[in-house]
Image 1 (cartoon, rainbow, N blue to C red):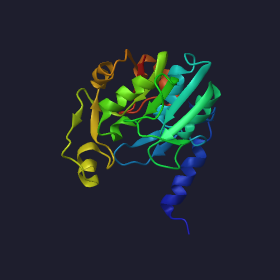
Image 2: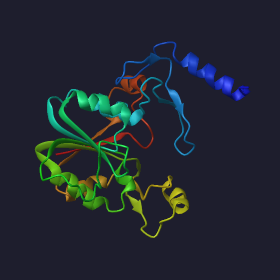
Image 3: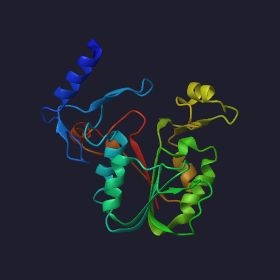
Length: 234
């Protein structure tokens, strides 16, 4: 038997498919609102596309870069998120995905010691990965090493503050949940991630959801409290 809360939630989901107040730029879905994000630490009542399951960060990335990224030769996609994969494949002659854990991507790779040769990829997508990596500076250097001259690497992480907070003595899942908001995160990034990326050898351009018409931000669901920034590294 479905509980009263279950019935209410299903009704909300059905009603959200009517109307045209929201539109997913990745898959074309239209409805009155996106589905709620259930994570209690990052709640959002208007976040998840019911068709392709994209979140704000996916839609922001596509919306911001769709006209800038064309005819890519070799793409490397870290920890591949399904809502982005179809688009990245469509604009790339060769697409490779990788993850530290077996079975989650095409290849198994450690971002701090990649097996790829220098200048192997002209486009890299690295979203919501570095906050899981203890040695993020080495990871950034590896991204720079495998990127071609003239290539582009897109980095996105949850941004919580102006200055990054990390503590290497925090090692248990319980401590990380308390300090960093998720049991597999190792820091809370600030906007000073730009300085770390520059130190790795990148030129960095920051794009934010605030750069776009507020009407588009609302319609396409481009903004969330911690995922409103993209760092375009060249």
